[in-house]
Length: 317
Image (cartoon, rainbow, N blue to C red):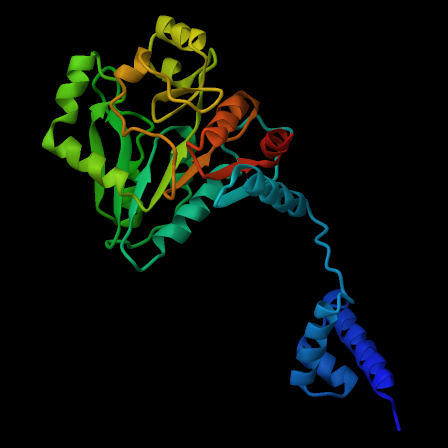
């Protein structure tokens, strides 16, 4: 008569065989059942036993494994509710390669929800590149709202505005912000924000279920300056005040604190601040944006991040 210990050992042997056949040899559970002369249900139980008894240790040997580990580290370090890290291409100088596709995937999953939601979007190169990756969809149940003005300094439509673009692709009602990114004066900003249409857009944006923004650097090649929204003198004043980054035009310091005065007095975008329970995803990568991304994380201006492997490594150091 076999003792219990012998039976247990025999069952672990069978579990090890089943685990090896499944995870190493790549057999299906039907194939394992045939090779071991057991039912498919028994094969499934043996594979599960191999995992529960730690007889099989699965190791993902692929560049994405490092990315997943970095994403987990960033989630723990900054208390994020979401993080996606994509592999870096050392030979590329692009600031959107990989993260545009990842951001598009996140937006697509969000928009696939049958339940109505409000999606708020920033603007800029990264967000535009992400929207360009979206497939055609039919999402009349959602509302897509802009966080930032869609008027360039010369009165033309902003080149990097994405609201109309995404609405055309996903067939959802959209609510643009019909104001300049930076008003010409504090008085003009006050008048613009009192307009009924603008107030409605701001209200929708504050109630957004999901928000996605780009993160801009404030170095000498800052997009706000290069695109003509602020002058060189204003950029220098921001540097002197300790600004390292901006989100939808709002400049903040290395601790993620929104600066008082300066160009922030005239920014007509929806105000930003600590995210709280709202889902605010930042998408950015590259050495030039590292300080801005780190500050946004430390100041809790975002609680989700889509970035590349090289940036993620620097953020965890």
